[in-house]
Image 1 (cartoon, helix red, strand yellow):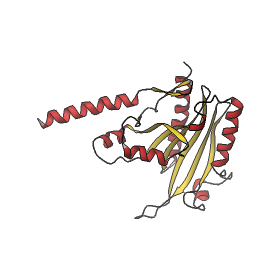
Image 2 (spheres, helix red, strand yellow; image 1 turned 60 degrees about the vertical axis):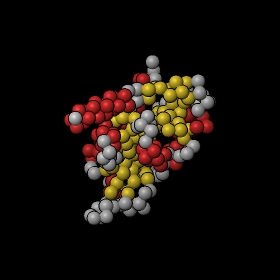
Image 3 (cartoon, one colour; image 1 turned 30 degrees about the vertical axis):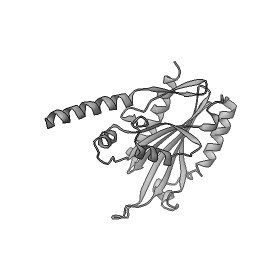
Image 4 (cartoon, one colour; image 1 turned 90 degrees about the vertical axis):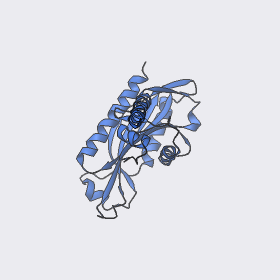
Length: 223
């Protein structure tokens, strides 16, 4: 009987994960915006979990509406089974509440993009290595490491910061994020991807997943 219950729980979890990974649409004023998480990640906004909702709310301003908060499929399985998720990588998509009902022009979007870039902090000086620069910065202070994409509909920046060292080892810890502002069907959408940094592989991953997420959402909303 125990095995039957475990099998039933596994099947329910499998179907729930598949459902959460499917594309969905949100209504922003007159526009319907298609959203989806990158492969390997699942949206959690449909779980109704106060804990995940609280985490998502900490990642953005109260003036934004959360459209999607995604964690890895592995973390979702752990969370569903009652185990603590690792939450080493996650992502969020939001939109400004005050502009939900307005159609944003390309000119207005360019103004938003410029303001967003200024808010993200200074750029890392050319010639400075990752550790040379961030080890001299206060914990928690973010700086722009590079520009991933800039055109009439997308501004995507790579940001990094030094975070609190681990208590046992006191090893320097870093966090990466990408901040991408998109103009989608006349609406402003902000995508943020977060990852711990242990080496160049994390940098390669966050660049690649951000580029793919932007391309996938543009393709999804081109229909």
